[in-house]
Image 1 (cartoon, rainbow, N blue to C red):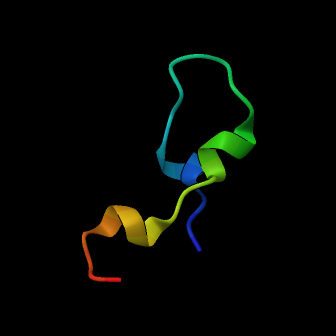
Image 2: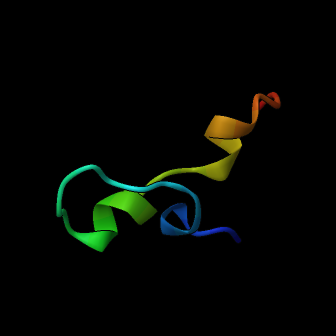
Length: 32
């Protein structure tokens, strides 16, 4: 599974956990 931190970059220093808390399916456009 892809980690959010591999793709997303924060503009400000935040906890890594916040970048990793996302669903790749939610961003892919495919039906759930």
